Length: 565
Image 1 (spheres, rainbow, N blue to C red):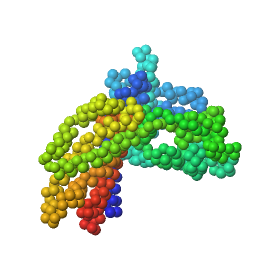
Image 2 (spheres, rainbow, N blue to C red):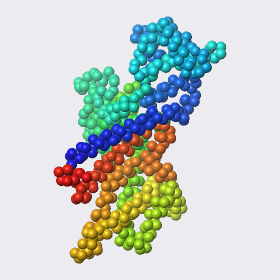
Image 3 (cartoon, one colour):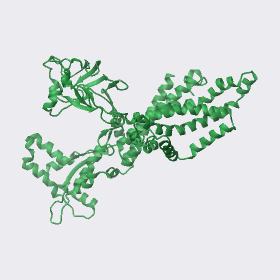
Image 4 (tube, rainbow, N blue to C red):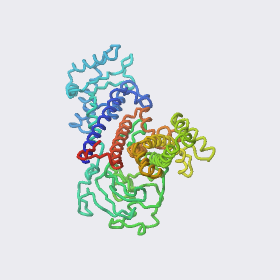
């Protein structure tokens, strides 16, 4: 078992790396990168070299390449000698303006750029030569010559630019992604010199991770100082009741679809409206000595009704206002808000798991009944349903169900219009369950009939076993063997959402993440979905093998027992 699991896990990790590598190659190397600007209003407002520099900036942001500019090099060089007043240095101004001396009037843009770059190489300017000399192997020196009018003046956004560009290798990109996939908050996350000093009130280190009494839950929590979040592990009244801000899964950042949001937040943050509760600001829950007090001991006059979730407080490196000083005892003053409803991934999972349970509770018994009444009316009706659900496009029967449910039972059509909210899950869940029921009916019927024609069934009848004993003890159990392997995949697949169903009913789920990301060229979301879906597939296969080995005595994962098949 251990040897099998080790081989399976190692092979799964290798498969995951290959899949992610191939997708990265497709997204970053084989797809036109300029497509990321198709819905970018800022790009349309840029002109000439300003547009080109904006493109390079966004390419770097998206992970296509890295680049450094001649301007940033000069700034760093002269700040080292002249400080903040470096721009007043005449030599600095001369080094900046030297780029205007390199110019070509060739009509072909590539020829003009090459000729102007050759002129730069020939310039007798130390700063230019030093900057160009920084280009290493695989780097490209790019010169954007000044865009000028006929009178020689520079056009808007046409200032010359010199930069060194390094295209990122797909292997280096994969390594960086994997290296940053998980992160753990430490006491040195916050770069604040004040935290390097001893706390005068306690005489202890200002950076720490320790247990403290949590006034908001009445239980103990692990809190930190110098970490990004104040509360690293805590309890509250929300499922699953214990939460953490310590370990983070970094799937990437969405730029085109969700405008700078972390992908894990997009999937996990609640999608409902703000939920306000009566609570206290942290400083109002401390006594004169800075010790935490309970809600009962706090001043009722300071009770506030707010949606702030004080368990999500993050360190504020900027200026703190007078009001924040009255509300918070330290620099952890940046909170998130309490939001109602479920997150995208929770919405998808709730609908999926209920649909899966319905499918197994209805599909398997119906398949057994069809097999027992083969070629009778019940079997014919079941086969008619199976053919219908397989032949009709899913979009068609989803709309048929939506029309029937809204007109007959007055169920909400759009998820957001449901009141109470639970009604919004009915139509999407049934839409997901219908094809699964038909699929399980089909396979259960087939496997039952195959088993009924087996020799051991005839032998059991000859031994005097009743039909009930034969079917309940032997046939149905053996017929379930091929279906057992798919149970983990059915459950974990609920986390991936349903593209068509969620779009028709406007459900805030994860089903649309990948398709929307592809249409908007949101590379980070595409890679994140690849990692997420591939990992679920791998885990479901391993769990399926384990479940099958447990259910079927003929299969063993121990090579010394003749199994491993």
